[in-house]
Image (tube, rainbow, N blue to C red; front, side, top):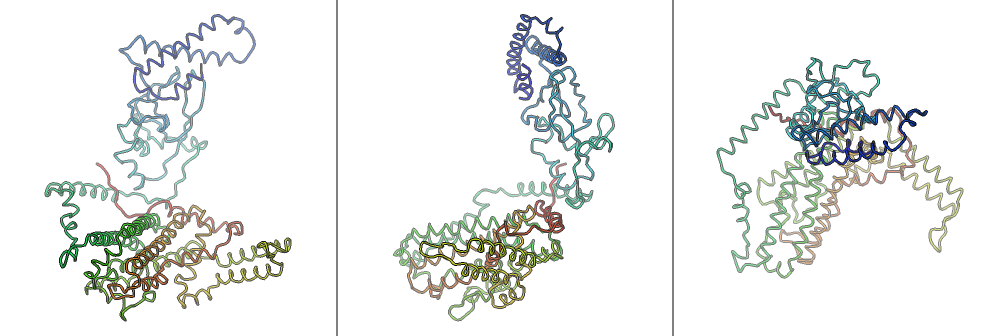
Length: 619
C-alpha cells in the first residue's frame, strides 16, 4: 500500500481534477480494504507483542489517514478542490512546464507555501523518508561567487524555455541573482560558510567567462532596442514578397540559350546553363563562409590560442563540406545529358569556358593554393584567361593575401608555443618509437619465423632488417633539418613546428581539449578531398562528352584536367601527419605538467565560444 502511494506521489500533478478524483477513489477503496483486513486480525496481540515495527506502522497509519482526508475533500467537497501546495525546494525536473500546478505534497509535516523565494535551490537529490512525513528534497546549495556573466544573462533573461516566468516553474533567474525574500535575506548568499561545508560548491574560474559590466549590459540593451526599431522601420517603408526578396525576376530571366538566339534551340542547353549558374551561386556561399573563417584567423596575432573560436571555424567549415557534397552530386544531373545533345550546342559556347570562373579561382586562392601548383596552358598564367580586368585584379589580390593554409600553420605553431613551450614533442615521439622497436624486436626473437603466405616464410634476419628500416624511416620524420629540406623541394608546406602540433593533436585526439581542433582539421581534409573529387568528376564528364577533343577555352581538355588533379591538393600535409602516428598502446604517458597545462589552456577554448557578439536583452 505504501509503495502504491509513493508511486502516486512521484507521478506528479494530475492533469485535471477529474483524474485526481478517480485516483483518490481507487486509493480510498484500497485503504478501506486494508482497514477491513486489519479488523479481522488480532491487532491487540500484535501491538502488545515485541518488535521494532510499531513506530513505522504508526507513521504508515498517519499517512493513510492523511490520504483519506484528501479523498474525502476531493469526493464530498467538489466546490473546494484539493490545494496543490507549491514548495520552493522541489527540484526543477519535478515541475510540469505545461501545467499551472505543482507536485502534490502529502503528510502533516509538509509546511504550507509562503509564496516567497526564501532559500531557493538549483540542485539536490530525493531522500525517501517515512510516508507520513512526505517526500523530502535533499538540499544542495551552490553559492554564486561572481557577478553574472554575459552567458548567464543571455540564458536567464531569455523569453522562451521551460524556466521562463509564467510557465509553472520558479523564476530561477531571480534565484541566481539573489533577490531578497520576504525575510530580507538574499536567496543564494544567505547561508554561511559553515553551513556550506557539508555540501558541494560550484567552482568558478575567474578567466573562464568574462564578467558582464554595466556598460556591456547597457550596450546590449541599446542594440536590442535599435534592432527592434530597424525591423519595424523596414516593415513600414516597403512591402516585401517572396519574389522580390529573392530577385526572381532577374534570376529566372538570366538563362539565354545561345542556340535559340543564333539557330534552333537545343533542349539540353537550358540544363547546361542552370547547372553552371547553380555552381556559381554555391561558390558565392563557399566564399562567404571562407571569408568568415579567414577574418577570425586574421586577428590571430592579437589573440592567444584559447581565445581563438575553433568551434565557430568548425561550424563554417562543416557547411562548406556539405555544399561541396552538393556540387559533386550535381554531376549526376548533368550526366543525364547525351553527348550528341551537347555537341548540338557546343559550337555556340566558344570561347567561353569553365576555366574562366573567377569565383572558383578565388576559392582556390583563399584556401591556400600556391602559384607553383598552377599548370599553364596556351603559354599564359591562369588569371590571364579571365575575361574582365577587374576579375583579374581581384583574383591576383586574393593570391597575394594570406590563405587559410598559412593561417592554419601559424595557429598550430602558436599552439605549440603557448601550451607546450618547454615540451619537446619530437624527442617524446622518438623515445616512443625506440620503445616500440624494442618490443617488436623482442617479439621477433621469441617468434623468429612468420608465415606471410602459403608458400613464403619470413626469416628472423629478414624481419629484423625490415624492422630497422621502419625504425630509421620513422625517426627521420621527426628530424627538423630533414623536414626543412622537404619544404624547399615543395614536398611539404607546413613548418616543422606546425607539423608537430598537428601530429600531437591527432595522437591525443581522445583528449577533450583536442576534440574540437581535431574535428576542424578533419573538415579541412574533407574540403580538400571533395574539391579533388569534384575535379575528378569533371574530368570524367569531359572525357564522356567530348573524348580527347580540346576544351572550348583552349586547353587540352581531359589531359589538362588530369594533370591539374595531381598538383591541386591544398591540405595534403594534414593527411601526411597520419604517417607520423604510432599505435595508441605504444604511446608513452604525457607528463603531468603538460597534461595540466593542456586542460587549463585549451579545454575552455574548445567548449566556450569567444565570439564578440552582442547579446539581445528584453526590457
